[in-house]
Every structure is written in C-alpha cells, then in structure tokens.
Amino acid sequence: MLSENQIIYTYLHLASDKKLTKALLSKNVIAIAYETVEESDGSLPLLTPMSEVAGRMSVQIASHYLESAQGGRGKLLGGVPGVRPANISIVGGGTVGINAAKIALGMGANVTIIDINPARLRYLDDVLHGNINTLTANRHNIANAVRSSDVIIGAVLIPGALAPKLVTNQMVASMKSGSVIVDVAIDQGGCIETIKPTSHSDPIYVIDGVIHYGVTNIPGAVPRTSTYALTNATLPTIVDLANNDLTKLLSTHKGLAKGVNLYKGKITCKPVADTFSLSYTPLDKLI
Ligand SMILES: NC(=O)c1ccc[n+]([C@@H]2O[C@H](COP(=O)([O-])OP(=O)(O)OC[C@H]3O[C@@H](n4cnc5c(N)ncnc54)[C@H](O)[C@@H]3O)[C@@H](O)[C@H]2O)c1
Image (tube, rainbow, N blue to C red):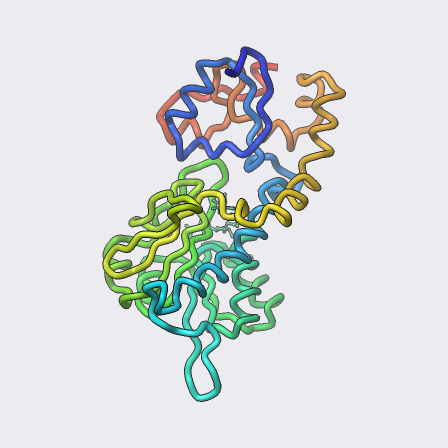
C-alpha cells in the first residue's frame, strides 16, 4: 500500500530482511530507520529507549525460563546464602548490556560482560563499581564464558549491519542442559549461531537442551512502558518531519540523515548495501 515518495519513519532492521529491503526499494519510498539515527556523539537516540526496555526484560525473561517448570535448570538467579548464584554472560556491553547487567546484579547473579571495546569495559567496570567481571571479546574468552554460564544474553550491535555470530553451535552445545539464551540482537540477525526469530505467542525452542528465546520485539510485551519511552524520543522529529521540507531537514539534521536507509529506490546505508552485495549511494548525492 506504500506509494512513491512516502516517508516511512520507524524501526526497519533491513540487514536481517532482504525481502523487506527489496520491497521497499521497489516502492521508491524514503525509509528512515530509527535504529541508525545518530546523535553528534555517535549514540543512537531512537534505539536507546527500546534497548533499555529489552535489556532489563532480558534478565527477567531468562530468570523465568531457568525455572524447572519451564524446562530450565531450576536455578534461582541470585542463589541463597550457602548456595551459589547463577552465572550470566552478556555478550555486548552497550545499552542492552548495561541494562541487563543492572537487573542481573540487582537479582544477585554472577555477571560477566564481554565486549570488543576496552574503553567501554573500563566504563562498565567503573559505573558498576567492580561488581561485574569484564572480558575482552575473543573466541577463547567467549567459549569459556559460554561453557560455564546458566544464561547468555546476546547484545552486540554493529549499526545497520548483520550481527556477527560470536557464539557458535559448538559453544551452545557445551552449555549445561536447561541453560537459557536470550538473544536480544535477533532483530539484526542475532549473535548466537543457533538463534532464529520467535514471537511473543511462541517465544522459545530448545537446541542441545538449551532454551532459546529470540523474540524480535521484546518491548512489545510492556507497551505501557515502551510506547511512552519510544515516543518521548521520536515525537520531536515527527513534528519536524511534518512541518519542514524533507531535503532541507536532512541537509541540516545530519543525525537524521544517518537514519535514511533507502531513498527513492537507492540504498543509502552502507552496511545494508554491503550485507546484500547491492550498490550503495551516499545520501548527499541524492538530495
Ligand atoms: N529484540 C528486541 O526486542 C530488541 C530491542 C531493543 C534492541 N535490540 C537490539 O539489541 C542489540 C544491541 O543494542 P544496543 O542498543 O545495546 O547497542 P549498542 O550499540 O549500545 O551496544 C552494542 C555493543 O556491542 C559491542 N560490540 C560490537 N561488536 C562486538 C563484538 N564483535 N564483540 C563484542 N562486542 C561487540 C559494542 O562495543 C557495543 O558496546 C541491537 O541489535 C538492537 O537492535 C533488540
């Protein structure tokens, strides 16, 4: 039902959906993806609120599926005096990662965050007062952490691109039966090799005895929180889009221009073009 020159301003996650990308290209629309709109410091202001919700929820979801009635290992995240807490490893220490860590720490779990960015690990160590273990992301560290974890939270992001598969099939097979994987990064294809998209109505499946949760829209479960959090961030730009000429707006608002993934039949987001080996056209050549 889309028509030429219409503006679509929403989450798109095109790198994980070639069919959607092709369909939008054929409609010659202007597709602005919330998840690649940037602030001047490189942060992602329209992804952040949903990452906060999903990060916090990921741990309560994992805690639920760890219960034995759900097929889990039957472990309480925080343990009790005299009994060890559960081990949670969070792969990716950005917004999802730190929010997952805060909830997991609050529940008393033993938390490890794995990230590729040493400055980010330093920051996490500081703000979480040394209450977490930090690990540099490499195959060896990830394999060891996965093997000893009751819960893995997938939370990496390379903006616009397909997530790298950091946790392999073999690593998943090394986990104990009844362990839980919540791959929040599933909207960009997921960072766990065994993950596939699931829905709120049918959220989990089991591989090698490990419960996999791959819901692509986790915040949809708590809309009374998520809708307010999201529209707080998106509404000012919606007003700008309604009141201004689009090309003028895009040439002055560089962060919004970063959100333009498709422009009238051309791909203007390089990671999306690269993912599908399609041609890339910089937006400033088109407006
Ligand atoms: N499923 C859902 O409902 C849902 C909701 C919100 C967000 N998300 C997704 O969660 C993912 C994470 O979002 P975010 O806001 O936390 O992103 P972010 O940019 O804040 O954090 C990503 C982190 O991944 C790290 N990283 C990148 N490459 C890595 C690698 N090779 N190894 C280890 N770490 C690496 C980065 O250094 C960064 O700290 C995104 O895919 C986002 O779209 C999903």
